[in-house]
Length: 361
Ligand SMILES: Nc1ncnc2c1ncn2[C@@H]1O[C@H](COP(=O)(O)OP(=O)(O)OP(=O)(O)O)[C@@H](O)[C@H]1O
Image (cartoon, rainbow, N blue to C red; front, side, top):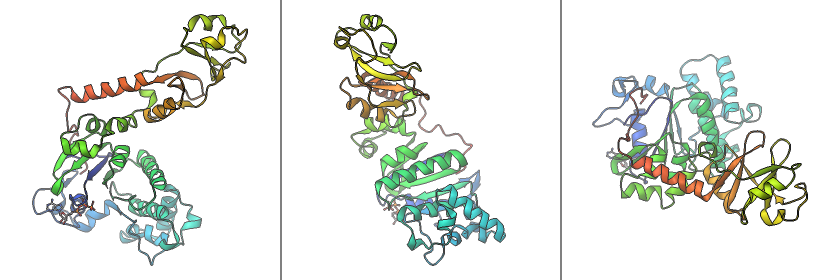
């Protein structure tokens, strides 16, 4: 198994399959009895354990903070060990707290027990990042917080990762979390045997065996919709007209069951109009009904599904950055996308482990 530098790889598997053991072998808290683990081509067992661990941030469930130390001293642990001077450490602590969304002035001198679970997790991540290690091991770091906070922390990790490009090995037993965070997912069986190591899209579209399929869940297709942004699919179109245009052209463009969009001067959708609503209309100004929720191009196809299920015409209207009309998503768009994804995953010549050996771990 190769983990390319700068990617997030998620180890996922049932309780007791050996995820934590695998992580602890990477930073040599446990020594492998056979096999080798290399980082940047060097066998970890040949490296000085202290030096090795300084290059690897480690954050664990329930943050694992030292309860008798302030937040600042917790975050300063590794920089202190490697001999940074006090000024540099203080600046780094503040920088890291701000990075994980905690105001240093407020949180620096608190003790872990004075923080919520989510805040403790953030401090745990700040501590793991403090000495700027190229590799981050995160063992169920968000396991002990409520689902909403968990979602926020996941978003935060993705933002941090886009900024810092660390190599992250992340353990979870929550497949949804793996799909959201992972560039790649390793689904592990007993004793960490690798059942499948691939991108989330390919695991969802073509699970390697029944165990992986079971893990991915019966709603694997729905999960796939979370992986694709609206901007990545071919959007449908519908007839449109400006609100100052005469209604005739739009009327001519609409068949009986159809509807069109009235746009403002900057092409932002205002109202939907149906053919019957146009029959006696003299102007498009007050005709039709409000367009309702529109979808930014950055939304996922899962958001699109939500939006179109709530709409009477089962169509979601997509808008660009300035709110301008960009197209529509229908059920056909979503079904088409899922069958394309399955066809791509099934096609011969695909590589299961395409990771190149520029790997960090
Ligand atoms: N490669 C391996 N070979 C033999 N035994 C292993 C291996 N990996 C893990 N084990 C053993 O399996 C048990 C569970 O391992 P571990 O705690 O790493 O699982 P886990 O997947 O992290 O579990 P959880 O999700 O419950 O935290 C431990 O007793 C460990 O020693």
